[in-house]
Length: 112
Length: 138
Image 1 (cartoon, rainbow over the protein chains, first blue to last red):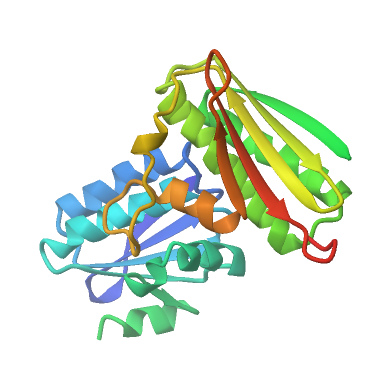
Image 2 (cartoon, chains in turn cyan, blue; image 1 turned 180 degrees about the vertical axis):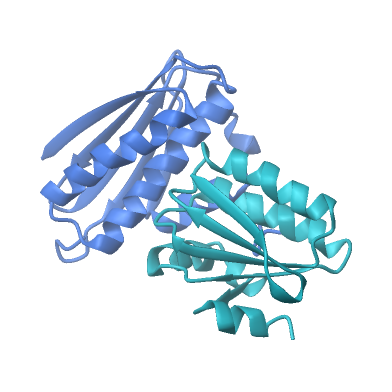
């Protein structure tokens, strides 16, 4: 999995993921997400356009980030999820705690 | 009945190659895209459980993934030879999960119609997952 993180406008950290998010790759992602939470990134956007597969380990990496960000009132939103990836979030009922947007513009609006 | 077994070693880097082989098999079986995605996830979750819990992260051990395609159902049998899983400790989490663990077992239970552990083996575990084919469609 390729993980690209860049600081965008309005204090937003934009994470672009490329590849499958499974038990193997989620360990690397988890390390990167913890680094962001450790420096108290206040707004995180995640682009799932190039992610075709996510399993419970991938979901768990984001649940952990969610917990850590909650401590300092950070916010995050996801966008460009394929129907398969969105299904996994929905089956796990995580669509009720994560903000899932159609595109980057809609995801950014969650922060305003 | 069509039966096919895939064998992987207990290491997370083998999960993706397994999914690639399964994709080809599911395509051959003419499963719908949605059910194919479900089965890929289910097989991955079950193997991840074997790697994490039965083998406790130890590499190089065998995991067999057997798929039986029958007229009325599709059965997955995931066999490992690691530490026995204590069924009494496998709980279904309450959702939405606000802790980062326990989602795998929930996904398995939710996405398949039946989940059973065959505890009769002298060594290891066999997880049996069944999906019934409603009207022969899957």
